[in-house]
Image (cartoon, rainbow over all chains, first blue to last red; front, side, top):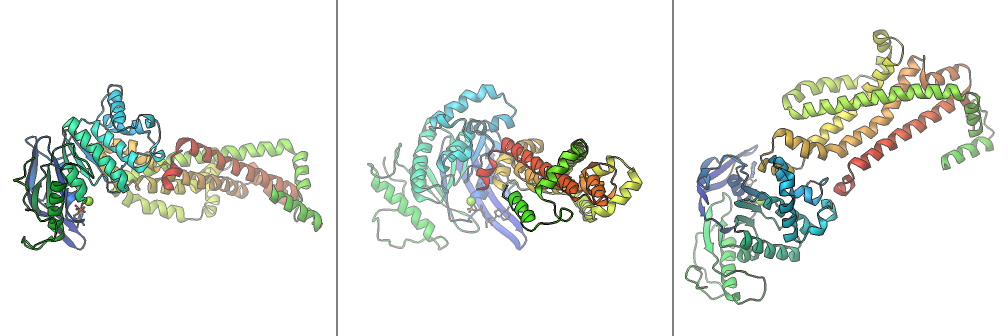
Length: 273
Length: 238
Ligand SMILES: Nc1ncnc2c1ncn2[C@@H]1O[C@H](COP(=O)(O)OP(=O)(O)O)[C@@H](O)[C@H]1O
Ligand SMILES: [Mg+2]
C-alpha cells in the first residue's frame, strides 16, 4: 500500500538547516496498522506529512498504491492532535466538510455521515456546535470527518495525546474496533507505548534527531486486544519492555544490557499466537 | 439612569446656572420647544453616519481581503493606507469643503475616512489569524484558495471583523459631527454650533443627548448582529 523509499527531510530554518529525517525505508501493507513511536522532535509529524503529500521530501519519495505522492490525495485522510473542528459548524456539518470541499453532493453522503456518528456514539450531538462537546467527543467528530472520505489510508498524528487518560483508552479501543471493521491502512503516530501495543500490527521506532528508523517491532497479539487483564499479558509486557528499551537508550549503539524485567527474549518474531 | 440622577441632583443641589450646565428638566424643555427641528437634524446626521459606515464597512472588508490575498499588494499599499490614516481628519475638513462643497457628501466622506481604517485592520488581523491546524486541514483536503477563504478564514475572522465594526460605530458619529461642526449647514453638529452662538446651552445638550442615544443604539445593533452571526465566538475565545 505505502512504500517509503530513502526518505530524508531537511528544513531550512533561520538558525541553519535542521535534518528532521534521514533515509527512512518502510513498506506498509494493505490494511496494516503501523504505529510510529519516538521522542518528540524526532520527525514523526514530518514523516506523516510527507506521506500525506503536505510536504515535498528533500530526498527519496513515497509511493501510495503504486503512485508517487506529490500532493494530498482524497483517499488519504488525516487526523491531527487537536480536533481542528470549525467552531461555527454543527457536528454533522463538520463531518461533511470534506464532501463540500470535494464538491460532492451533500445529500448523498448525509446518511453515511449519520452512520459514522452512530458508530462513534454521537447521534444525539449531530446538530450541536463543537464547543458543546467534550474533548474526547470532539476528537471522535474529527475521526468521523476523516472516515467520510472512505480513505484507503488514515494518517493520525498523536490523535489522543491531548485527552485525559481514561478517554484516551476508550478512544483507542474504539479505533481498534473501527480498524477491524473497515480494514483501513493506518499510520498512527504516538508516544504512548501502551497505545502502540494495543493498536499496532507493527511499531516503527524512530531514533532522535535526525529521525532514523531504529527498529520495526512486530506485535503478534491476536485482536481484539484490550487494556488491562487479558490472556496475553506476558506478550504485552515483553513488547512494551522492548519498546521502552529502544526509546530510552536512544542513540547508543544497540547492545544487550541486562534489564531486571521481564526476563524474556527480546525478539518478537518467534512468538506463537 | 444612575448617571442622570446624579446629574440632576448635582445641578439642583448646587443651583448651577443652566447656561453652564443645564439640568435634565432644561434639556427636556429644549426637546419640547423644537421637536421637529431636532428630529429633522437627527435624521440628517443619522443618514450621513449610516451611509458612511456602510461604505467604510464594505470598502474595509474588500480591501482587507485583497491585502490578505497577496503579500505583494499588502507590502505596496499598506504603508500608503497607514500614512493616509495618520493624517488628522479634522485637518482634512476644510479641504473637503473645497473639493466637494456643501451638503451631506463631505460629511459622509469624513465618516468613511474615520471608520475605514479600524474595520480594515481588524478584518486583516482576523483573516490572517487562522489557526495552523485549520490551515493544514484545508491543505490536506486539497481545498482551493477560495474554498479555504470562504469556508475557513473568513468565518474565523468574523469575531475580529465585529471588533472593528463596533469601534467604527462611535467613530462614524464623531466623523459626521466633525463634518457638521466645521461646515454647520445641517445635522446635529450644526445644532450644537448654532445653539452655542445663541447661548442656548440646553438645546446643545439636547443635541448631544440625541447623539449619545444614536451612538449607543448603533453599537448595540452591531452587537446584536454579532450575536446572531457568530454565536460561537464567546465559546472559542474562552
Ligand atoms: N516547517 C519546518 N521548518 C523548520 N523546521 C521544522 C519544520 N517542521 C518541523 N521542523 C523540525 O523538524 C524536527 C521534527 O519535527 P516533527 O516532525 O514535528 O517532530 P515530532 O512530530 O516527532 O515531534 C523538529 O526539530 C522541528 O523543529
Ligand atoms: Mg508531532
